[in-house]
Image (cartoon, rainbow, N blue to C red):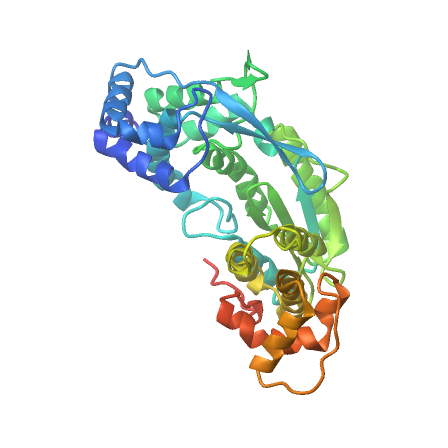
Length: 421
């Protein structure tokens, strides 16, 4: 295993910092504790990069404390994010560009989180492969409590020191870990953890957890890991129970993390294994119910009858949501679900258009323009029930929404597993 001794010099380059800034700019993100936005930093880019370069060269660089942000989780809990200042994100990205090529090639082949060229779809496909082709249908679904917040600083440095012997790089890494956090205007020390939200935190977590991955591999356990989402796939219940005991000992003993006993459990693929938003069964993969509920909640917020926005604007906002949802969950056998969702979404849009038309006479005029004849029933234009009436469907057929540019989930080919590396 190669050990790298002289890496800090690679950081002392304006081009390296500029390359880091371009990636930070592309990733966007909020301002840190100093209030400096990406646009502010970019407005004096040359000066700011020169200042950073001089500080790094003279070993005067000190990262600012991170800004604490609380993000609600789907289960009702809170996820703590730490937002570094833009200048610190630039340095972290430049450092990441140096360290990632050193560590990433040696990671476990079934580790997929936050790695270049790897994705959630590949992780799902690997788990599906183990279940359906290798018949490892007893699965340990492990959940770690606040993984990023529990990483031990000394173990982090020890893990990096196996490949990096440059003390300047290790000291810089330690500075990021110990920069502290601002909570309610007060500085608090960070004695454990790596701020979830920092550019380099995903690499830190992967380097930290790779010890677990490699030990499980040495013990011939099949795993799939995406960040702190871990599946251990076994051929029998007894083997799964043994694997859970081994994994818990490694994670809580050697790595000083905390396994969430309430959420960690054994599952059989006949009943479905929940992973990264889908539920993998022995013969099919479906979307988790909570993800469907979450999508419907977002759609309802965008398609309120009293919004007052033009239908074209509502469709444009909807498309961004539908496109992301549709292409992510195409890995599942979701074609029927997509059909039902589109029927429901079109009905909500018909309801909005009826409200915009206000009077039944405008609906009737639309029907006449389409060539329909006879007497038309008068309906209540603001009623949800009316949006499912035949008249509304005749006036606004599915093809009409296609013409309006509504993204159509049913045109996505579903059930396609990703290429696994």
